[in-house]
Length: 187
Image 1 (cartoon, one colour):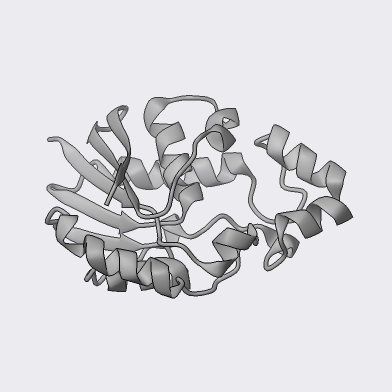
Image 2: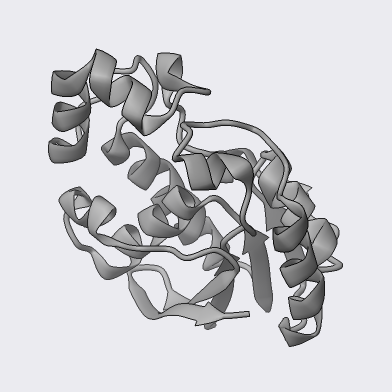
């Protein structure tokens, strides 16, 4: 059985433009507009999931989707950095930010490491391989990165090298331990 998973990155938000960690703010009006315009471009699916964030829920609503929050697809936990910008954290904790970006096992913020999120999402992806039909999931960019790292079997150090633009679809097809990836198709 071949599984099909389409990961949709959320629309733009003020927090995205500000490079704000884990800010659970909504999509902006332009992002919501773009999501509504893209609604017709989505394939049918047997299930629709979302990351548990206002931005992902708002994007799903704009796309006309009724997604169910999936705990395994929750955004990366950035601990005490939540709500702060990268510039703020970089000025206050430059060594911690440098360690976090260089070492995927490191979580200086007290939250989740990149390796942890890759393992969590990888486990979800393997269980998704058992679902017959297509799964659509509106998820934060770090969840897309983690899924691609797992699907391709690349080291977690590649995580930060993957760009995930807003409102793009990353498609994974295959089965346990054998995935094909189509990256970043604009909606």
